[in-house]
Length: 239
Image (tube, rainbow, N blue to C red; front, side):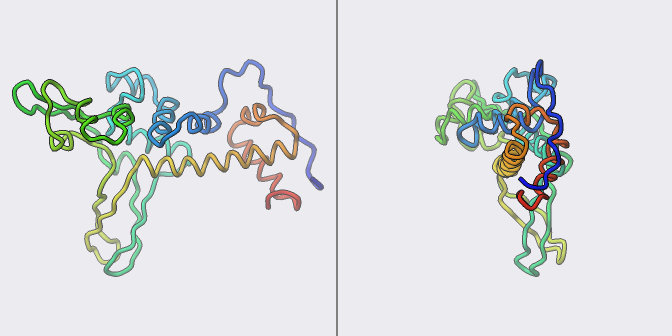
């Protein structure tokens, strides 16, 4: 590749116990198959022991969906350096209104369960429940039932996920706006785009300098991006 500066000294990789933050996140996405499995692996990578202890669980898959969705918003903000946003066009005036989706805008999660009668109750589902139920409402209800089987209405009353209608008002005319959101899906889409950027950085650095993927993954995130931008600014590079 003509015009490139001499290759910088590769980082020392011996003795490293784990790749840096974003490389580990990309690996977590690869470890999951379905969207739910990906979300679980991302949370297993991201969630601290303190967060698990706060919900009295030892595995991120067993966090209540309301907790898990909010933690995914935190992962998005940490990884991409900005809060997740949703932009909606007003059907009345055509004005675009942007809603930030962050911990301080979606509201705090409160533990939910319901007593449904003598010997009957239901708890909030987890990502593991959703994964194992495989889209079957009856199977999900059976997993979350405590005692005799409650109803799907009871289950809906305790489910606190960030999936459903987002209600606000137009920034232009004030008319009520409703938009269906799925925070888990939106977060995974953003992280997948980030993963593609990481793959591109790995590709251009490996091509330019002959480094192996492990060496590139060992770079601090900021340095890896600077070097990839340097390579891409060359006429023979990406840009």
